[in-house]
Length: 180
Image (cartoon, rainbow, N blue to C red; front, top):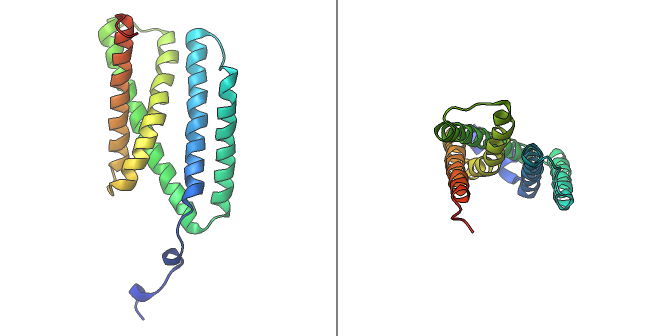
């Protein structure tokens, strides 16, 4: 008997994509609002507005629901969720790293090399904010569509680069008063 003709469990079952989507979206929502709260607290000194709390609560419910569906699911679902989390994590790390590099280069050019403690407390959450949102989602999408080992890294890097340039362009437009 040949191994090529043998049926396996993986041939008959399909992954529970709803569980993985809810889990990943919940993780993105909670992490984005926590990072946004850190940025707002460091810049303005106030805490997260109360109308954001339902979104954080909804993201937490998504994490719990997706975790339960994943744990109780088949091995195919667990494998699918694990690979999706790895791809989005690689994309988020790549997006955060490239955004941090672009932000440091921009602050070096504009600020003339001025470094302070506030620089790190404000500059670090901003690349994480853009890296997790843009890089994580782009790494997940590109990693699923383009079957290559470096696809999630490339997707996260491109998304982080684009969002950081758009953020810097937006800041320049605000500083010069041409954005209304």
